[in-house]
Image (cartoon, rainbow, N blue to C red; front, side):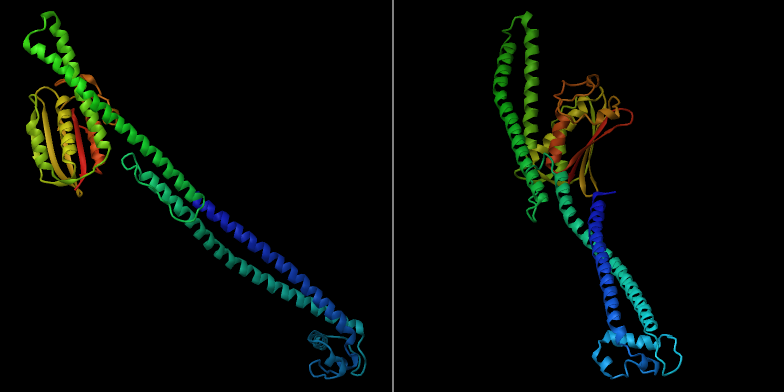
Length: 413
């Protein structure tokens, strides 16, 4: 049972219990007062009834004598009740005993009390049933009004991710517990946004500052190697140091790209995907891999440099994790109003459990699959996914039958 249903039942139950208690008290009080009033009226009117007039057949309504004229409507009713009741009479002029008249009046008064009490009980039940429907409607309206605001908070909180931490709930309405919850979540988002911004700023600044000493180190290693000024016994170590420096430079460049992709898009412009992909394929060193292209002219809005970086990373990943003399298929197509860039490569089989980890930063998978090219940084697909999400898109990975991977970038047109 959902919380909304339980809340409706509780509110409706409170209303119904209150209404039932009120009607029960009303029924008991009215019944007691009515019975008491009948007893009092009967006791005061019976002695005043004229036995001679009743025995002669004169009704209370036709009598204008001093007794009936001075009595109340209740006495007139009891007088007529006594006439209509079978009272033992001997002769028309014989007086009827006062006890017989009193018994008839009391019998009729009891019948009247029961009749009125039954009618009151019936109408009380009818009112209670109607009140139950009204209470259920009010309870449903109150529960819906309260829970709809909670639903707004839940939906907005579910949609907010690290890509749009600038969004806020700004919950309207009265200053109650639900608004306090929304304001608390907004405060938490403020703190998270500050933390993510500081982290991205640190990565970008650190990467930028590290590029200069690494460039200096690489230059200092390359010049003596090119001039032949390094002794033969040191050349192997110098080459290893140079390769490590180049790897560090690639890693820092990837970190800069990842940090930039997480900061969002300041300016966007139309980007023709087929032209962008062709440029990246032409600049790419295929390393003996056969590249097939099937590109459809599609235009998206975004940052051309970031999109080019994402496409290049997919191409490099398809070549790096390929087999010698393998193939690479590059496609650009339209799917349900979105642009899809597919990069499919041959290679070793990939386990389904590994697919979910390929977009994790610094995850390189099975190192034995890398049969060509230098080792990667482990940030290629993580950067692709970050760029895709920044452009309101996504990345799809699928193991290729026979070995290899199909990586797709999905972008809104």
